[in-house]
Length: 212
Ligand code: DC
Image (tube, rainbow, N blue to C red; front, top):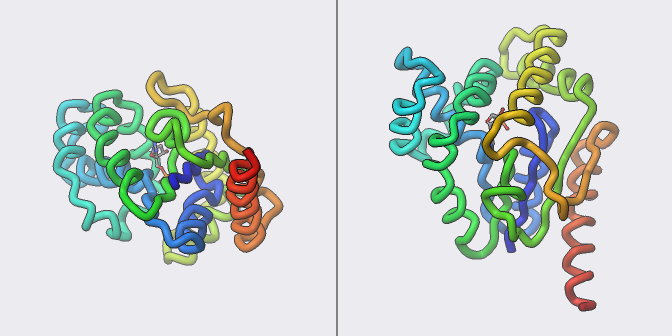
């Protein structure tokens, strides 16, 4: 079974995807990390984020072992990832890796922006997670402070809105809800309730199938 979780920055989809994968014993891929790793490689070598050829080279050289690097979590790397992820050839270079991950046994949960629309359009369950931008900014600020980073909530909100705008309006694989995705509004849910709501969606889809 493939579960696709998409949604905007800081919507809580990452935690939700990780917890869903643990619940079902599936593997989990946070696809944002892949774009963050490409952006980080460019930032640390001083290459322009819009240099598509160099970005593709970085994408093809990605080492999944580096996905745990805590430097990838920063707000700055997230924004840079939003820029490099708009480059069509970078996205193309990363498709096969994501599809192979999704296809492996026993099942997988992938979270990102275009999983249900482009990477796994035939995923068994698709969930589109949203939350009010102000609530996302509040949560992101608290997370950054917990990591010891300085964070100004107004700046974080502006970054989130700019990122939404860029992710939703890029020409290739823009962020959008797939027509067959379930909408999960996470604004008023704590982590446990969000996970419960996602499991309920997966179970409803499974039950629906069994009846057919
Ligand atoms: O989910 P995140 O904050 O880690 O993602 C960082 C950026 O990467 C995001 O702003 C857009 C891009 N991204 C993407 O274009 N497609 C994905 N499947 C995942 C992330």
